[in-house]
Length: 306
Length: 159
Image 1 (cartoon, rainbow over the protein chains, first blue to last red):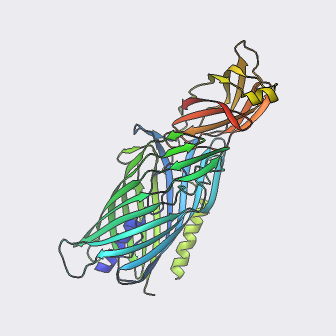
Image 2: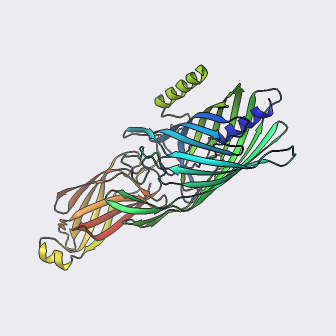
Image 3: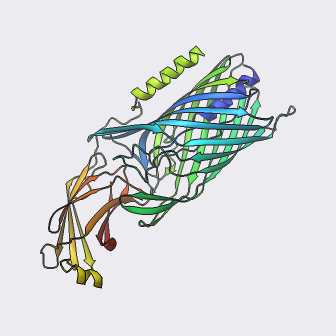
């Protein structure tokens, strides 16, 4: 496989965990939707199936969910990115969510469009000459635009209409990638912040003030010589500070954190790529105050020179 | 582009027909309810205006007794009966608004609005109580007269 194909697969590995976001309290943050190959436009379509298998309490104890309390969050995401100038690119993503909650009482599911993400990015460390060690580097800014209900103003019994995390979050991140022979290494890190927001629910009016958070992801991949396949593994750690509630309800939450691991397989065919990945938020058993999930993703991407 | 179309159709089909996962637990619950009865104490002090304009309103120390009719459980609609009595054991006839909500302090969120129905003097039925996940929950009881919260008490439970 050529270098171009390998670069495209690196993107795929990062594309997999794009739109995680439980109806409540799940772990998921966005990774950059970047063009890293020699093309001007890329159109992506992905499907994610996120099964909440455990609830993790504030002591970090994993409690497995029972048969009568099952929750599956599915997301179809359409994404587009465009290389506007040599090192500047812009992108957006729109997800469609379907949340399903099954209990002995009833099965509840709802579908709707989720939050929209906009993202400019700049390649501040381009690969202008061969270097054995110097990676390519990008800086990206991502903004989340609220487009649906969250757990704070849900009108559904099991919050299945909560397609949004509830805040206009702004993310600033760095992304580095390096190819060495048949192997590739990618490191991505980000910090995010959200403004406070007022909610009204059950007759109570209250402000929710989120604290800043961050995440870091390491990805290692391998493409066998003369093959269109790519195999990857990734490790990600995430943290979000405790939320403060004020108004008719006074409360200080607890911070949330988790570490997840994933595997992926990709196949490149002409100007299209197909990728399947598996991510496990229970693998290391390291998390706090969140809903842990096992996630399967399928992604299709089309590269264009428009 | 036809291959894309076929792939997208497959994705869409998977999306609308799924809602399931091979990773979900198929074992039944081994948990039992953590409590069946709640006992709390409260006190209502009426303002001078309310005392003079609405003489039928009862004030003073009261006991709140709450009995789970169904639950508490995270997989079902929960129901509760609330009975208010005074220090003599007689019904405490609160004629304001009893507002009840549940809140998960660690996660920082609540749940679906709870329906409160006044059945008789000092007797209320609470329904449509949904605990959306495992963990520690606070049940808040707010006593409201003329848009003012005159008493607020809470009870915590772990599911």
